[in-house]
Length: 117
Image (cartoon, rainbow, N blue to C red):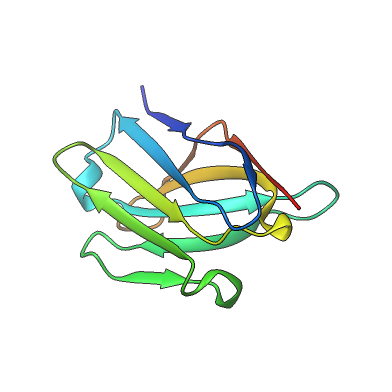
């Protein structure tokens, strides 16, 4: 059974930091491409950052220089370090795992991040 469990969300003031974690089980983590998405109220889910199974990262422009995605294959966990948070970053953040062929796609349950002004 595949499980992706996010943690680390919460309420933080603008300018603050949070570190999200996504612990996985039931997949061969090291070969999966991982990503973080977010969905704000009334908006569509959007991609935030990805990290390939080889460690190549990509971040959307609005978070570049503030957020960093990373992975620890020994712990089967992907992280999202979020610094200089803004109210616009408020959303539910979801972890995503894609198989190397992109045919399998798994999601976590999400963790709420709320940034107050």
